Amino acid sequence: MKRVYLTYDNLAKQDGAGAQLQRIFGIFAVAKKLRLKYLHSDLLATAEELSHNLNSDKDLGKLLQVVNEVFKLPSDILPAYFREIKVHNLTLRKLFKLVLSAYLKRENILVRICLPFGLIEKYPDWYEIAGEEIRKLKPEITSNPKNQVVVHVRYGYKPIEGKNIASSPRFLPLAYYPLALAQLFAKENLDPSTRVVVHTDIPKSSGSWAPYQETKIAELESIGYEFAGNRLQYETVDLKADYFSDYANLTVKYSEPILETLEEMYTSKYLLMSRSSFSYIAGIINPNKVYIPRQHGHAKLNRWTWDFSEDKTPKIELLSGI
Image (cartoon, rainbow, N blue to C red):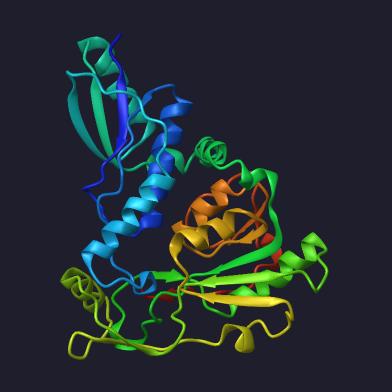
């Protein structure tokens, strides 16, 4: 019997690791839900980020190797003969046509997918299939959750303001997080002494950064960031003093290694996501209480909780940047 095989197109859009992993989770989930075949494709490249604390493509390659080992999903064996098709954004209609074609033409079809969102966004609970698979590989996620709240603060390099703005608004202002955290504490009836860990991509100290990838410099300049001698000036933020002073048992972790950050997010009893794919995949894996911003941009899983009730959601303007 001829079959359709779904795989991630790892050459089409090599942006952040979190964004690419979310696509892989989605493609895997679609394949398993619809009883199609799945061929796993590793991440081949990712965009350099200040928070990675890396100095070369060799360092980035080592990071990718570890990420691929941790998130390698079960894969079927591709037959020797097949037709290959690339799909930018998968929809149910496109997929139905491919399955029908495989049946009528009696051929195996490998579908390389860049984005699964045309389908998975309509059925976000399918992501649970990927989350369950990761939890099988890491049983400690379910057996021993940490009694703490983890808050993910995605802030980028710094907001772009005024005439330089050339990117769409994409991340939440820092003032959002203490408001959402207070709501979480109230809804869960948590003791004020409950441990809170804030993970952020904000750097530990102020300084300047010279990306080694020329494409990264071009990307940042194209949306309004200003470089001087190929260096970007940045400033840190004292999150505990300026935004979370009401929480005595709170620790801020700045630009920690991405796998350590992810692990702490998906092994905690409570997770407050940011507007990012990075914390979205942590929410998929975390089987406990997950809070998602109403302005996240991706669909909410049924078991997740909104940060605010619809009638009490504060007016929040997203910031431009990356």
